[in-house]
Structures are given as C-alpha cells and as structure tokens.
Amino acid sequence: MQVRLSERRSRGAGIALAAVSALFVFTSANAADIHVPADQPTIQAAINVAQDFDRIIVADGVWSGPGFFDIRLNGKKLTVMSANGPENCIIDAQNQGTVFWLDHPWEDENAMIQGFTIRGGRSNFGAGIRCGSLSRGIVKDCIITGNFVEFDGGGIGIGSASPTFINCVIVNNRAIGGGGAVNVFNNSNATFINCTISGNQSAGGAVQLGGANPTATFVNCVIYGNNSPAAIQVTAGTATVSYSDVEGGFSGTGNIDADPLFVDPANGDFSIGAGSPAIDAGDNTAVPSGVTEDIAGNPRFVDDPGTPDTGNGTAPIVDMGAYEFSPEGGPIVPESVEVTRGAYQSGTLQDLFNSDDSYYNVEARRPTEIAAASVEIVVKGTAPSTTASVFEFVLEAATSGDPVRQRIELFNYQSGTWEMVDERDGVNGDTTVTITITNNASRFIDPNTREIKARIGYHDRGVTFPAWGGRFDQTVWNITS
Image (cartoon, rainbow, N blue to C red; front, side, top):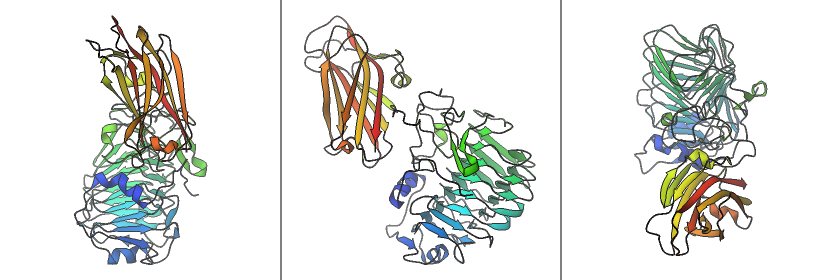
C-alpha cells in the first residue's frame, strides 16, 4: 500500500530547500547540484562524487537496484532530496538491505535526507533508515513504510546516534522484536518533531527504547493505531513526550490519548480529518525556525476557527503529526494583527476569526489627527499558493460613536505599495464588505512567502468627535488558485 499525501501542493527543489534553510548553514560558496539520473545514475554514485554542501536531487520515479539501497552519505555534509516530494519519488530496496544509512561521526545537521518515500528495506535492524556512529543527521518530509526487520526497529533503527526527524510519516513497518516503527538504544539521543507513527507491527512497542541508557524526544507527534503492545515502550533510558497524541497515554505536558481521526489510513491517507483532537494542539516553540510547511507542502501553521486552541504559543497553533489540517473550503484567517494607528482597547486575534460579535476594539487617538486615519489595523495571513485566479477579502466591522470613513487596502507585492480597494462611510452596526478581485489577483500574494496582508482604516475627516473608534468583528480571505 502506498501512503499518499492529502491535497498535496507541488513543490520543486528550490521550494523544498527554502523550508529547511534555517536549520543549518552552508559554508561553501562552491556547492553544486547533482541530479539523479541526469548527472549520476544512482544516489550512491552521486554521493561518491559529491563534495560537502552539495545537493543531490533525485527525479520523480520509483528507484531500485544497486545504488538505491544501503545508501550511505559516508560522512559528507550533503542534502539528498527529491525533486518533488515523497509521493513522487520512491526509493524501494526490494528487500535487499537497509534503504538509507546515517552512520558517520562527521554527519552533523548539514547531512540531510529529505522528501522520499522509503520502502522495501529488509535487515536485522533499521530497515528503512539506520542511524549510528554518532551521526547527527536530519530526516525531513519522508514517508517510511513497508520495511521489515528480523529483530528491532522496522522503520528506523538508532544506535549510538542523535538524529532528528521532522514532518515524517512512519507507517506500516514490521519488526519481529520491538520497535515496529522505531528502536532507540545504546546512548542515542533521538528527536522526533511533528511525526505520524501508525500501523506498525511488532512484539514490543511501536516505539521502543532499551539498552545502554538511550533518550528520545517526541513533540507534536501522533503515535496511534499501531499493532503493538504499547505505543511507546521504555525498557531502559528515557522518553520525553510533549504535545503529542499517544495511544494508551504517556506522561508529559500537553499530551492526549484520543483517536486522531486519520482521513483514510486503510488507503494510505494519514492526514487528520475535521474534528481531530490533534488540530491546533501542538507546541509552536518546538517547530524549528524555517519549517513553514508540512510534509504535503501546505502551510505548517493554519488555524481551524472551529477548534479551540489547546496547544502552546500564539495562534495559529501547529497541529500534531506530519500533516497540518486546513478547513475544507474554509476561509484563510489572520495569523497576526497590528494596530498601526489608534489605541488598542480590547480583543484578541481570535476575535478576527469568527463573526461572533466579539470585537477587536481600537479607539481614536487624542488629539484628533486631521485628515489621517485615526484608527487602523494591519492583518496578515498565508495564502495556499503563490497564484490566485480569484482573491476575495471579507471584512465585518462597525464603528463606535460618530460616523467616519472606512477604507480597505491590500498590499500589492508586485508594486510594493498599498492599493486601496474600497472606501465608504462607516456605520455603527455590523456591516460586511466583500472585495472580489479576478484581474491579476496574484499581485496581492507574496511570491516567495505566500504572505497576504490587508490594512483597514477609519478616517474622521478632520472633525473632532468626543469618542469613537473601530470594532473589527471578522477579517478573512478566500482565495482560489
């Protein structure tokens, strides 16, 4: 069974690198891109000729045979990555060995494996990925599935290493012993951030720690639905778990034990569905700087207005697991709000998500500012892509006190200026204004970050009123790519 990505957005090598660039620092001005198979026939052949800080970019396809199993970075600081994500680039060892090895002390955070489906590995330990020899490499945006070991660590085996796994799906692996998904032993120190672990089979825990005092950290993870005696089994060492959904429960801050409501796990879709307790339940501070997308290439921080924020941080709160939930057909909600003119009175960012008469209140300054916006806020969000055929902005707001002039501006990223899209008299009662743009709608989306922002201001037209301000009830976007 192939694991599939839910509503996956196409992303090339340049986009993928941008998402992880903050995790490490290149130190060579001569780094090169080596393409497989255009420049070298196999991943291992590309590694053999590569220099530190080169990128090895693998074309779409299902790759197997010599050079596509027992792949070793050999201590080099390389990024080995797919061109277009794990759904499109599958490395199949066909039961001939472990797929990838991270097993050299020179492999630090600049040694990265990214964007593959890793399957068909078979060995006695760590059939999908095997980590050892003090390696500190990173594995990101990978689907590790369908691997088998005769002892421990069906998907991943970690011994004497300190790897980090980010946005990975570790599903449907098997171990005769323990750790159908992951086995950690022998003074290792492993970290798992926003990973989904499900459907793995073993005699011991789906995740197993044992032997010579290993440690492992799991944060923002979903470990649920495995065919094992326990989700996490610790026979030696320490597992630190926080803001994670662990079947059977596990002690730690923010942890839950509840069905994550995978969309269609029987057919390989381990994204979380509407109403999942994993939505908005993670820890924002645990997400590495520069990680802005989930495994499917969708924004990593998306608020679901219908779900309470139970995680840690300022909204939008990251979800648990490798996939970020986006409300089906729902609005794009503000991720930040700033009062640029006027004095903040009351309200929270949440008040701008829903039309619920809980206002974000801003009062005019004193003395009155002649011929200028006395009340003004800027709201920012993230578009689902860098292109748009229809760009819609919806404002529901009211004024308090005497009538004033209401102005809506959208930031034009092509000209680098604010563009006024609507101006009218403000009224005391809630009024909804919908701005729909179809001509060159993409100008309002940042082509690099997908940022969108709107500026809403109230002008007093030079007349001094005793007391007035703006009451912002809802600001949302609807964008069709």
